[in-house]
Image 1 (cartoon, rainbow, N blue to C red):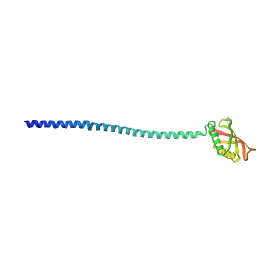
Image 2: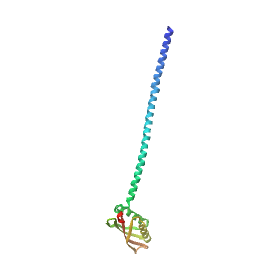
Image 3: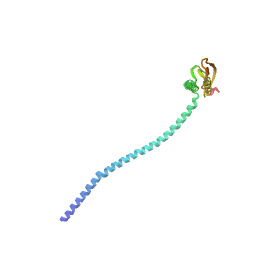
Image 4: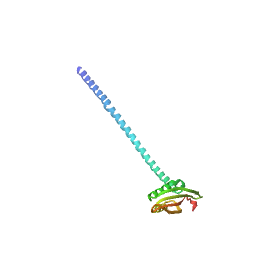
Length: 184
């Protein structure tokens, strides 16, 4: 009987050791592993949501690009009909740049008068420059190549007495803009 009790104690002792080992395994290996696994699953879920959201965003971006292209096309069609008075600073800046490139000095560059007609607008600019003759002629050539509809109404070129090859030039530049379908 004593051997039976010893075997039972040994079995109880082994069972206790196995239970303690499994408890230690659970506390130090299994549960921390589950926590790490849970964190990895959560990270994977967030990344999957990000991928799905980016796919939705890709279609939104392509739709927005298409709409932007349509808006730019629409604006480009109507840009030529934009009132010239609103584009006048751009035009004056191009004339000033042309004068600089041709080594002439702008003495006067100012709008003289503006007339509105039923289908278009007419703006007259008074332009006075001084500089070498070839520079003044180069400026006139650049003005002639400007894309806006225009003409030179009056042109005077006078030689300056104190400088060789120096001239003064005054001209009126007439600009037309805002032509509509009705102007035929």
